[in-house]
Image (cartoon, rainbow, N blue to C red; front, side, top):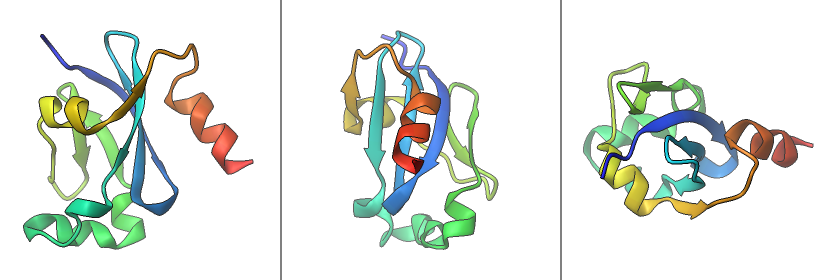
Length: 93
């Protein structure tokens, strides 16, 4: 199965709001990974917020990226009609 990330939005407390190509949406908590190796760089909020979609997965400006299967497996997913952008608006208000 292809786990294509179509949208990623940084959210509070080192979480990512993610839309997948199969219509699912979810939240990925990155806090458990921020003490390991290259991921320590993401502790800086400005660096963390430079996240984007690249080649169907999550990537940061610094070149750090995640395997799409990892993103899908670790994400708290939902089939809700709202995507990452709508979820981000809710959390910011």
